Image (tube, rainbow, N blue to C red):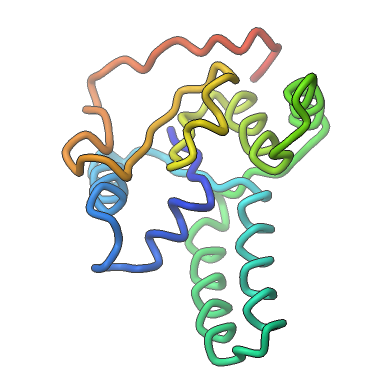
Length: 161
């Protein structure tokens, strides 16, 4: 099961021009019927991107991104994970002693609580949290582990579902 970071879902928007590894990740995950989730934080980051484009006056591009975001929200309607009190507790722990990248830490806390592999290009932002990480921007063949491979143990040390 996967939690897709903002950079990965944004790359998917490029369709046939998307990074080959990202395209392979989504294709292989679909073939394996592997659940893919988004964090509500990612939804917020995507919305912010639309609004930044609109704010700078590019209404045509903002409209295109708005339509794409609506498609994403429809496709993942049942797979968007909320930021709840349990995740907030883990997020608070992750921010000490290094409070930087608070949104990434909210996404990390979501992956930890739900025991998901985080799919991201920004592995450096997440590697100290004991998460399973997958960077699909590398080789297309290595983008998704085979269905019969065992994921590494999660070493988070918190109480999770």
